Image (cartoon, rainbow, N blue to C red; front, side, top):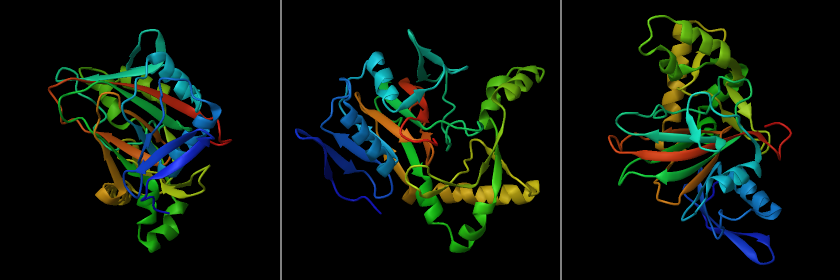
Length: 293
């Protein structure tokens, strides 16, 4: 069902969250809630329901210090361990600092679902804007529900039979640029590994099917030749990259976004360089409200 109308979601007898869809396919802005304060269980459940319904939810004009950022993430599930590469907020090892400028360009400016090279990729992420350029730096999300549902019916008949190999993709650059040997890369591949996932998955909460390949980390269709695999994957990547499947969010000071990593992809647009952009992100690895995250 497409979401096209603003609604008021009752949390308790005295509070109503205002939920405004950004596109019919995915994305909604949530108002009438203060994320600087601890969430009640009713508020957390209501936000979770919005996340499942809209795949990515946005908040404006919030003040979320690191301690509350952590508490907010923990109300949804198990927080990830400290990232082995990215910096973190002092005193909060699980809050990743994504700080970029001309001297440190980003590596997230491409469509991807986070760390699908893991056998059990994370459930969700919670991103808080900290320091923004004067313009640019938007983030896009794409609905993998929409990508699946808009495929030709003939493809929907046989794609669920396929599986694909996922690995580090572009993150190889972190272990090869400037290196004269493959020692760092070999160790990284042992550490981060690879995974094989179904090309089409079923969401454990919504029960809906979604496409599960991404150009950042998916590199081969099991059982196909390299040429066959490349042709199919390129078709699917092009299909995913349709504006009809996407929502674009323009950040402002005080903006917060949370997305369901299982059924979306995202793309952080690097059009703000050489200027500075800093975001704080927490990855939530397990969904506390689902037995299968």
